[in-house]
Length: 243
Image 1 (tube, rainbow, N blue to C red):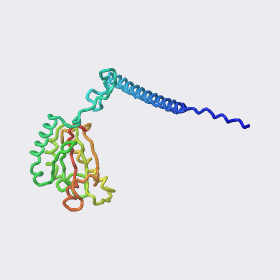
Image 2: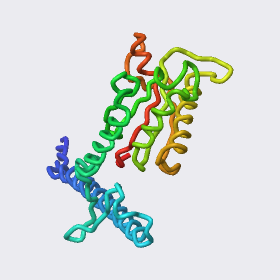
Image 3: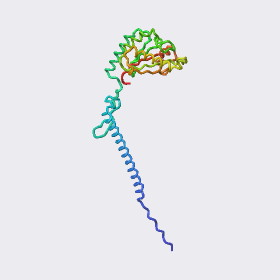
Image 4: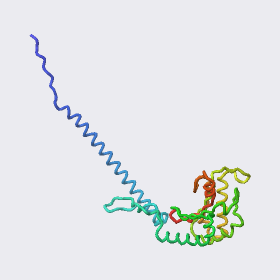
């Protein structure tokens, strides 16, 4: 007589194992989140401490464009954002720039009417463009002697403020014994004008910078002779103080 096989006990609680694993993973996830948050808080506290220490030493100026790190209410640290128009010149600065523009227009009105001096405003400031046709011979970096009286009037009307002198050319290549490329020509013309500003104007050397851009910052198209003539220029930029 055959014995009956005893049926094995079927457990209906095996889901608890998977559930326990899930709870363990979820707990680990929140632990990681908590640790990350603590790390960020420590970094902010360190940044505030460094900023506070350097401010007392006078390294960070009160009017710096870098947003200050301050302690917000509730004990947490936050970055104070700059206003959206923080880089825009103030009304007083704009009024001063308009006054400078008016003085320059009065000093060089005949040349402006002839088109050998152009003026326009940019985010950097007021740009006075000295066109090659009125100030330079082709392929020469030194200003014409006949243009010096005009230049003197311009220099006298410039304010004692930061200036940037930029040399520009058209896209026609140049290769002479003096200039290997348009880079050298544009830089030399800018340097020549900067040197004259120091001699004839109210400019101080520490407020003056020079740049040569060759043909890579055109004011007009290089596809026409008129456009190329506009691109051959030296720009004197009266900076507005935000750059």
